[in-house]
Image (cartoon, rainbow, N blue to C red; front, side, top):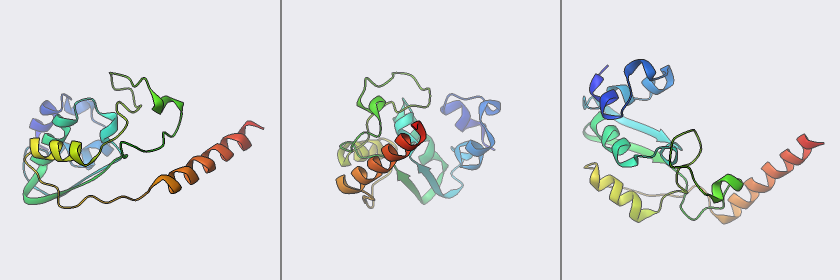
Length: 142
């Protein structure tokens, strides 16, 4: 384990749970990983630039980051996503999402470049997911 990452990310090593350690965060700064995977997490982190630098530090030269996140112009999942968004980390979203320009800026700041941006959903699938969630909420309420 490389203690540098816990210092860079502002955590003491004992504050990190086992899942966070296993995802590579604890190895950052060592440049030992071929791949870092960060799924649907970055919108919950206030200092996303620091997170990106830490993940970049995990990677060997030529390593890859697989990052998934919400689109900036997505349909909010619930009323909390409409805002106001918190300015502290408590598990909720601290930003609405990202677009290409923001992702390019984050990557450039961390010394990485974008190879590809893809989209797994659009307005129709987001509406479908919202309707499913809503129907489950209605069923649970009765």
